[in-house]
Image (cartoon, rainbow, N blue to C red; front, top):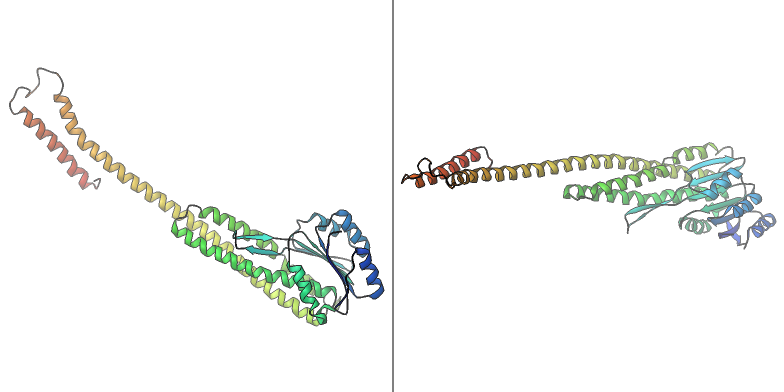
Length: 331
């Protein structure tokens, strides 16, 4: 079985590290306390064995095997099934990577199922083992600690997204042609991030409704409320990202249209200049071509001043058209 870590805790202290699921159950039955089993991408057979030992609901087991679940919290009798979407910001690629963590909690057991590299689970276990007074509260303490860790890890993601949005603003006014694609990619990451965090308030509310019924320790209640405050802050900041990106996309469209208009205007000016000079040179070419024909009978052909007159006509026609085009700002 793909067991990452397996331990039995009595009064918040790790008393045994069984080598198999069967040994965990036997140790738990002999010494009491709580067992915490960490699994990594288990298959149907492995999850079926866990479900048989701890009475897990088949629907929750199916979700844990198939993964790709939305964040949620579901109760099956006295067992709780929680799905979280951890996230981390990758500086090298400036992207957000999402994981998936499934948590089964019961009266005396915790089963965590990871479907991505989520080192935060191992750190939560180490931290809790350093706080036996907290860990002795049992599965609820583990669940709240995992919630707290996942929400805390959203902080660097928020900072990374904010930095990306700041860079987009620089790209917009720098005329970067790839900025539109970056905006769309960032918007997709923000939407995925919101899908991971938006269900959390309702999940917190559901946990709070079970405080009295399940006798949750007052210290754990305080910790959950602290996590709830952090969730509200994260959601508030993430919601602002979509507005900023929408405004950036609108601004990009406006700047692109302005640049196209400027380019079109510049092209029109060049066309005017070319057309003007072409017209100016057409008049001399016309006169030259006309007098270059092999006609014997033409006005002024044998007149001594005919040649100077033709030159004068060419110069005058060119000068008149130059003045006209200059006044129209074509030149």
